[in-house]
Image (cartoon, rainbow, N blue to C red; front, side, top):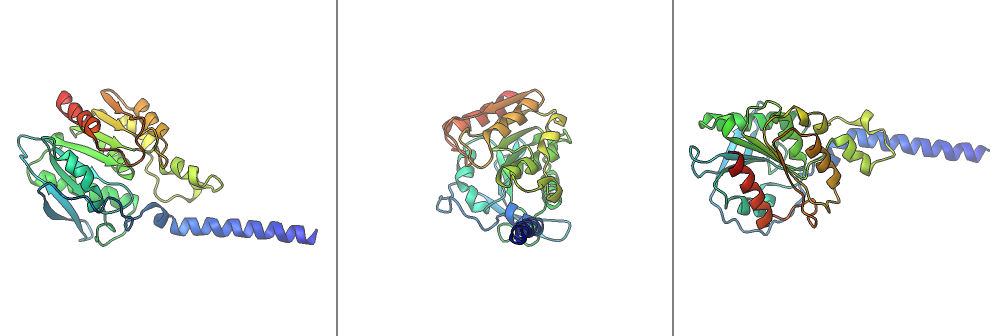
Length: 267
């Protein structure tokens, strides 16, 4: 019996150590600025590297693809939880084929920026990027919010303002709590989380047109989460759910055509 209690005590102690580790290091588990993909893609678009200053005097490295601010709408891209701006070159190469301006920002803590990424800080970074566009004469109704993975949580948060042209969500999740529960089913996630991004509770507050894109073979964020957001979203809403795409969606002709059709038909 003595050994039984010792074994149980050891298991309980180990469980609490895991809980403490996850609580204090959860943001290291959520944000991965050093992860690299697609670094060998050649840049075939012209861009200006700009720096958007935050509330804490942090300068956010950003790329601005400017064609015609008066004639074309501007897509504002909020990237996901991993990598830097160069990891999005493949995406920008294809999006640049459309008649749009593009601003993609990198979060604090990413792409060599100082500061630490948190839910609150990402919301602030995004709002300041909109303010920067406004300073160029680009009104909210000319801005298309584009969220990629974690960035969809930021896009949905801001879109509740309902002043923007439209919203595009790529590989979205319904909440960090639900997504984390897939990987850590044995932990009390709801009690531990600092950053929540509760998109499922916000999506129905958005009245702007929405395009939801999600690969059906996504093994990081289940495709069903994209479907749930789409089902709860208000009209007008559109979807692009390719059968063979995973979390990093294939920016092929079909996807680009879906975005182009969404932009041109609604605007």
